[in-house]
Image 1: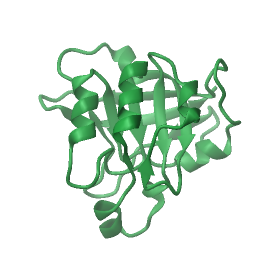
Image 2: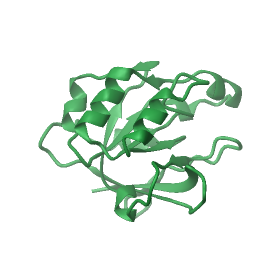
Image 3: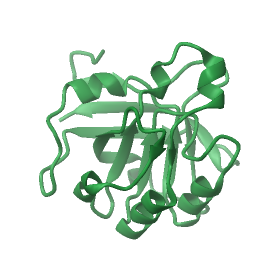
Image 4: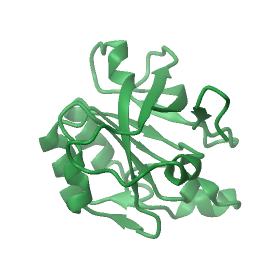
Length: 175
């Protein structure tokens, strides 16, 4: 639930499934991790493919994917089976120049693989996994359309580390 300032904590704190931010090589400005964000409701789609709803995103935008996965109660099922991105959607994200992708699932790939994640990172796109509470944000938003400003602003700063992934605190603000 958001607070009196319209802030919603998206950080998952389930043992072994903390919200993590994958970082491309090189130094990234802090502005990479905050800005206007659009949420695509892809609940029920095990395979998350490109569709015309993706066209609302432009270069530099933040795309959040709401799968409903983080709302599952059984951690064993959460780790073994979850939604993933198709090559076609990954191609769109890279070609469009989206700067950050977030998802409320343990990853963007078929469990046990890293092809989509590696392609996004190699293209300079950061990825946040294991978000939660996106259902509350989706319930508060109007449908998004091209040319209209997004209804949310995301803040997801990495905790500095020497690895390609870091824990982060992800917070969404209703604009």
